[in-house]
Amino acid sequence: MVESGAAQPLLDMQGIGKTFGRGPATLQGLSLSLGRGEFLSLLGPSGCGKTTALRLIAGLIAPTEGRIRWAEPKPRLSFVFQSPTLMPWATVERNVWLPLRLAGRSLAAARGEIAAALRLVGLEAAARAYPRELSDGMKMRVSIARAILTRPDLILMDEPFAALDEITRFRLNEDLLAIRAATGCTVIFVTHSVFESVFLSNRICVMAARPGRVAAEIPVPAPYPRGDAFRGAPDYAALCQRVSGTLRQAMGEAA
Amino acid sequence: MTDPAPLVLAPPDAEERRRRRAGRFERIGRWAFPLAVVLLLLAAWDRIVVWNDIPPYVLPSPRLVIGTLATDWPVLLPALLVTLQITLLALLAAVLGGVGLAVLFTQSRLAEMSFYPYAVILQVTPLVAIAPLIFIYVGSKLAALLLCAWIVAFFPVLSNTTLGLRSADHNLQDLFRIYGATRWQRLRYLQAPAALPYFLGGLRIAGGLSLIGAVVAEYVAGTGGTGSGLAFRILEASYRLNIPRMFAALLLIALTGVAIYGALNLLSYMLLRKWHESAVRRER
View: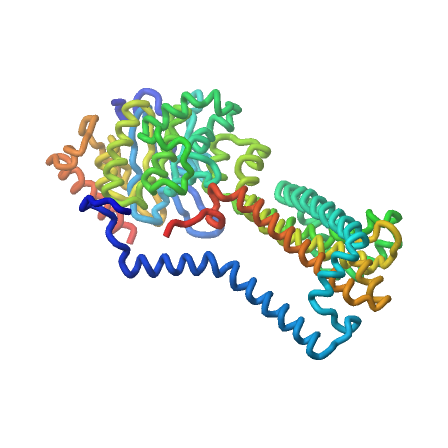
């Protein structure tokens, strides 16, 4: 795995601030650096600006202060939202096709990639189904398949599993790590779950609110692959406790 | 089920039986009850006319209306075809104009600000107030009739389609931005499919309105001769106190309206049945 802040960071943000209208600053002095191949979690309570930070990185909104510096050539991004965000009128296959369709590729020409992406999320049998016929967990898998279709350099995930039940979430966490191992992509993962962030990432940025900023960075040294056994390991429990404590501290500061 | 094996379907419990009864009631009742009401009303109508000895120029019996429909068919059929032609052309124009303007309005804020108020003014002004002017200024009678019917019918298509084009999921719009979609791609792959259910809702209203527009415009035009529609035949029959023919023509107009509504409903169902909540059958 690549060390954090390796030779050339994929992404470097220094002193980022974002204020909406005349309200208080949503983000202030946010600094963050991301190395190629990292799995970084942004962990924090609701309202700490995690999602705003992710939308800034995606280029959907512009910062009011500071600059976002990208590696050259600019990495290709994809985004996974909290809701599956599928087009209800299109089959699974045609939903996954979207990024390539927008790049001008026909369905026939993209079929191989679509099948490969669906195989990675374990849904090759559901290619012709409509989203409404799928469970919430399966819909999220389709959303992930769409995000990995073009083999992007960086995947931004905004609490993708927050609305799922715990059993499904655990399965998807493990599968996400397997997908990452297979594709080697870099991930920024927004979550409010301490356990999820420790299980998935090799670095956690704990965020504080009002104004949103990075309060602490905690590396997760445990090696990949991590399976369900990792959840019972003593270093997992110790890390969770430590991250929990840091999070409480960050929230205490803000209150 | 005559399977002697012990493992057979459990007999339906009370809840299951109740649900099946309710389902059967729903299926049959949807047809049977309106039909029963119509038959009762017709019977009452018929009896009132016969028992009170009401002359046909005051109130014809239903049997006479049906008879007139058959005997006057050579007069009524061409009139029906004329009305139908104007209605369908006006509906087509309403779809083209309504969708075209909706796309324009959602693509250009300037166009929307400039023209939307006029669309509203056209919509809220009663047709009968504008129609006489249209018949003065537009030379061709067909074109004038079409214009009148179009004015009544296009607004629901415009307003519904505009709403639909704007209703695409915000996250999906963001995703299109991240993938660098062009304006045309966004319109075609995201906004148009998202607007389809709204458009179809507007179309159903426009179908009825274009018939109303066609009939009202013809009344205002009031001219006869060849190529006149059902509305003129009703006017003409009323001058001659031919009440049975008035009823027969009215029946034809009503049936045309029902047929248009049914056809548009079917179209809507066919287009949406795979994915939209309004058309997808729920398993109970």
